[in-house]
Image 1 (tube, rainbow, N blue to C red):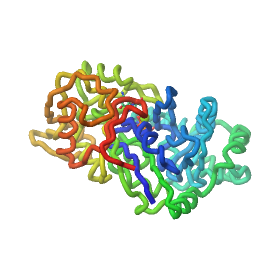
Image 2: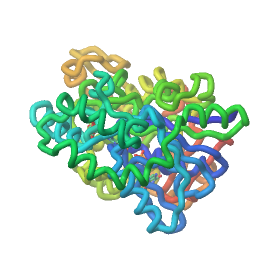
Image 3: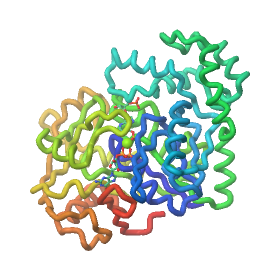
Amino acid sequence: MPSIAIIGAQWGDEGKGKITDFLSGSADFVVRFQGGDNAGHTIHSKGVKYALHLLPSGVIRDDIMNVLGNGMVINPESLIEELNTLKALGRHPQIAISNRAHVIMPYHLMRDQASEDTQNIGTTLKGIGPAYQDKAARVGLRMGTFVDKDLFAAYLKTYYPYVKGASTETPEALIRRYAPIIDALKPFVQDTSVLLSEAIKKDAKVVFEGAQGTMLDIEQGTYPYVTSSSPTAAGIPLGAGVAPKHVQKVLGIVKAYNSRVGEGPFVSEMPEKDAHIIREKANEYGTTTGRPRRIGYLDLVALKHAHRVNHFDAFAITLFDVLSGFESLHLVTGYRLNGTVIDYVPAERETLQACEPVIETLPGFDEDISGLTDWNALPDHARQYLQRIETLTGVPVGMVSVGPDRRQTILMTRIF
Ligand code: GDP
Ligand code: IMO
Ligand code: MG
């Protein structure tokens, strides 16, 4: 069974949507396995811009089955809105929603706001953390329960007092509010683990699409400034309901520099005068929240950490066109901590906060590379930058993205 995982190697927004779309041309399935509408995946195709949050990036091709896996947390109202937007754009996506995925209700959004008031993680306020909290506490609402009106009413009767937070909405009002949404979503809810296993037996081509990124992983990221799921490759078997051996290849999506939205340590953060240039050039504002993204030099310490936990077969380097025009380019090759240089990401936030970047400077390039589709046509200094990343991480660069459009892509080897 040919399969590939698209994994964010940094703090999210690496361009996973674009790469998923590029590689899914010949795919049968595109599968989301974690997260919810905290994600914002942008795709430009044939002059149309799609901003996806819950739906897998295969939805802009009508012949692909898009699976919302059991590891996701799904806001049904957002999902309906997204489906309607796609329909208005002339798309008729095929979707399957796991009956084991958890449901985000209005009270999760309220609880997210309430915990932000004290904790200040800088979440997207989409209710993600509280929905995963309920899942782990074994009081969560799952899709299979939600779309059965009797089971939904029984769930609310038993659990609502424990999960509602400060919500004053009555269970009856919730039932009325969701009745039409349940009718609309019910036909798509099924056991997607069975659906995928059957397809895998028949040699279907599957793309697993990560949301967020490795440094936002609840286990391996910059805790507590992380999301509440596992966007690493390890999250796929759990969140898609497939065996680990069915994840064949792992592609690490790496923005040519770094960006981060939300609070938390960011060792490679660059001076605002350069950050500003990149932010405006690449429109580095959150797709989901509109917040300006923090910008940094490419952090190879964090990338090596990401490679250790994901074992990437190759990197796709994205937004490389954005780096043209800088006299020099910078890579963070180590962290200086109390006078010593380290090459790992410390676990404790206080320690990470105390790290200073060790910076290697390389010559920049001026040429506009956004129309190139051939590695050999890249300017020498551009190739040097990519080769340095390969040398220092040990991961080959298999693809380079030089613009948001599907066609603005340099493919070095056949990846999928
Ligand atoms: P994702 O969350 O990883 O899917 O990434 P986002 O969609 O949130 O952010 C990436 C942004 O960069 C989007 O606006 C994309 O359209 C855009 N993009 C993707 N690849 C490239 C690229 O190679 N060059 C440029 N200039 N923009 C890109
Ligand atoms: P995509 O899929 C970038 C960040 C938030 C916050 C932290 C926790 O587009 O790459 P949450 O709402 O998940 O509890 O917020 O995670 N975050 C993202 N940052 N891209 C994303 O998704 C993100 N999803 C969550 O900003 O710092
Ligand atoms: Mg994004």
